[in-house]
Image 1: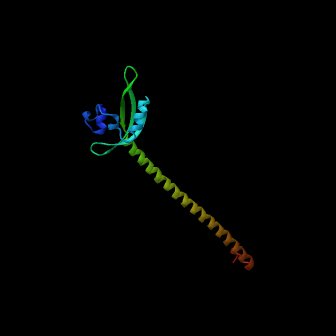
Image 2: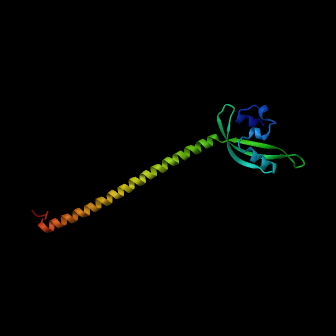
Length: 145
């Protein structure tokens, strides 16, 4: 229980012996229902508000605790802080978005370059054809003066 006090910045006395619903915010009813059936909840990612009002992103593993007769008498929670991992994931997502935009811009640039090259080739052929007609009509020979 001491480890629970650290991420939530609450004293041990504030958590120890409290009902799960006190510590669990949000989907507590669904979790309690699963625990009552004896199911283990693994890697439940959620956001909590610490005592100093900062957000804390955590991954919870919750297991039912049974007495010697097999009856469920409580639950054990293990919380791992994942705020740093989530920050890195968000930065990675931002970078991927930026990269996608750059790739799209590059594709547009390359497509416009291809179109410009095609237009230049078309104009070159048109100019060559026009010059060819001019040379044949005027008998102009640039190599003979």
